Image 1 (cartoon, chains in turn yellow, brown):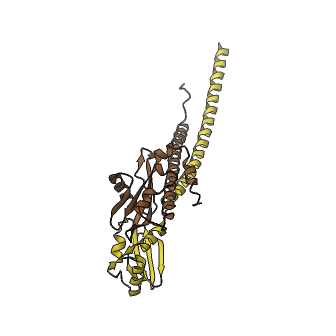
Image 2 (cartoon, rainbow over the protein chains, first blue to last red):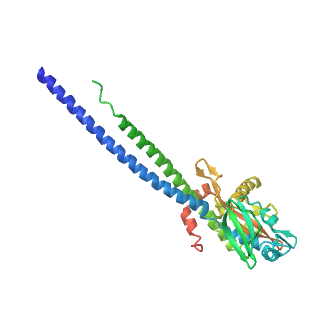
Length: 148
Length: 173
């Protein structure tokens, strides 16, 4: 009888030991898995950020916008000529065309236009909170397009 | 004696690991979806530049030219030409209502930021790219937008893959 009890006790101790060992293995496996997942997560997050930037900004074509506007015409004359003349007289209007009205009237919601003379004076365009994306240089200043 | 209880730290570790697996899986599917979406937008981008670049007067289009233009994937693509100065849809291959919806979104994202409003569940249904172009209107050139909208369901049904269609714009590379 004593022998049976001793055998049973040994069996229980072995089972408990094995269970403890198994839990240790599970702990190690889970910890390794958690670390691996964290590394994968950081890698994906980085990739996601790059992709976001590429999707959001990679296909931007600010120059197409700027030059499309400059090549557009009023009374047969390109807006480029009106901008050049407006910069010479340091005003936002020339030949009956109010450039600020013309540019903002295009309805582009996250775009800001700025006309700057050669001394850095802003003729029109308060682009606070925007980023400068494209610049058309003229002898007497620049026309700039800024985006949010 | 109680059964061998699983220690709390093992349960915690298991929960953290499972949570991380779930987060990684979500992130993976989101990133994959974004890259697919990006491919569609690249297709729209290339198509828009291809159309504008091959017009008789570089970057200046007429509604007749847009109507007759041929390119790879034409049947899966809708074109819209919009006059920004006169706020007028010059040409559309979609219903006026749908076109206006896309134009409104494009005016917020010009130039070149892809729209996000055209998803079908978690799949991009239609993508678009809006390229600023000049529009020849009887001598006057108006600043406008050429919007290439692609039906991604139709693209997916084509025998050639999206990559193959994009590669067909060899001039760009």
